[in-house]
Image (tube, rainbow, N blue to C red):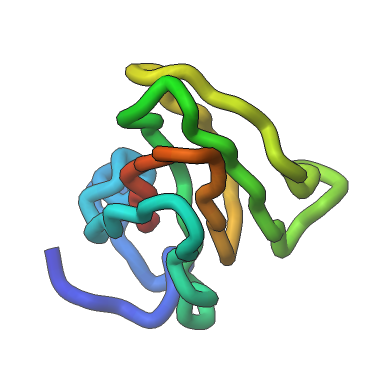
Length: 100
């Protein structure tokens, strides 16, 4: 899939792939974050890799996807949304943040 500045410029097939996280991912450990996503790119899902993963998010659209503040997400659980920043906490937190 080609790199594009915004999901609005994707074909239907490319947009469906992007929703699935095929625009890349970032592994984030306790005490770190994804960095703010580029314009037109968001983190669309987060998968917890440890039982002590605490997730804090910043959203571009708080009405549709409210910010999270220290939500504990057990290992193996994936949450979906649209965030421009994901921060991981906990004593041994680890997660994969997928870009869309």
